[in-house]
Image 1 (tube, rainbow, N blue to C red):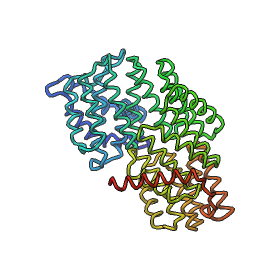
Image 2 (cartoon, rainbow, N blue to C red):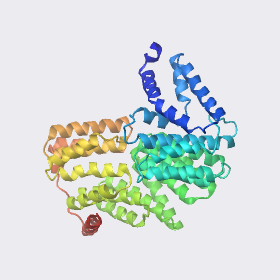
Image 3 (cartoon, one colour):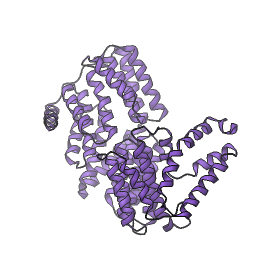
Image 4 (cartoon, rainbow, N blue to C red):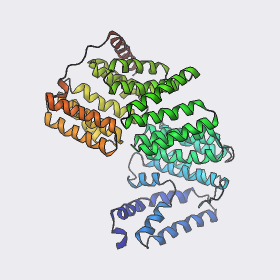
Length: 476
């Protein structure tokens, strides 16, 4: 065992393998009763891994990596059984293993350690029943296991749609690594079954997931693949969304001119073809370019137009949040607070709620409410923020502290923001934080700069957002 402890990576593997004991027991329960072949093959596989754990570190890591759906194993290894996410992660792992067993006989050259049997879903169903009845992941997983009994691997569209729904539910919970794992499974089987629609959707979700995690080279590859799938399958919407993703990556890397050209072309093509959602997405990203250029009135108009074309609630939530960011820059702090509170109360996605909360720092700081700044700071410090949101948190915290006159704390927060941007190659964000630091050095208070006078059109939009907040309050 001493060899296993010689590297930090090996120690991590040991902890993870120890944490897998309950998972192994649950998988055993998922094997059909009386199916001796399934039981013996599973434990032969487990015993083989245990035997290899006595060999060199390299062999140990190879044995560990040979497990399917490692994202779920890694996630479980970081938890205890009392963690609120434990049950839904175990249920997801069992469901994905059942999906593997269902589909592998149809794939050439692949073998399954646990042969498929209709009763394989019994263990997954038992685990799903342990999830809170109101949780979206419970419903998404039920749809997947039902699809296993109703769908043929040769014509898997119904099941793949269910898996994409499960992946989206994971994204709503900010479980990016798990969502990526699910969408990789979808893409592999969709391409084998020549299901262009599901393949394109999975590639887009993979691009999104990797972009959120600041893996921009990987994200760019998936967005290009989605674009090509869209072209090959004749689905213009997928093709355009792939190009929008490419533009988003260019924007995050600070290449604003390339991003603008790509997104303006998409906006024109989408308008001509009557693709309202894709046009709204392009307008939304163009508003981000305008915001970064300091043209907040134009950014507000583009966002308002995009908001009118969105039909998906998650997209509307993000647009409303970005409207509020521009309200802050135009000095309309009450309107910004209204928008952030609406998003915080109604947004489906955890990441969007986090974004609204960290952006509220730019409202409560100038209001002199240090207690609110510290309350939001503590809650966000405890959150598992992805790189882009982690940058935004420190950047906005620096702005809030500067508005409170705490220059030392502001400098520390902005320095941390710059370091995160550099680490993850968020060049556009790096420029933003460095500009904030320069303003702080010049005026000794980022929050003391005077806001421009808002155009009448901006005030009209602000009034509409106020009315929306009142509707939400009445609904509560």
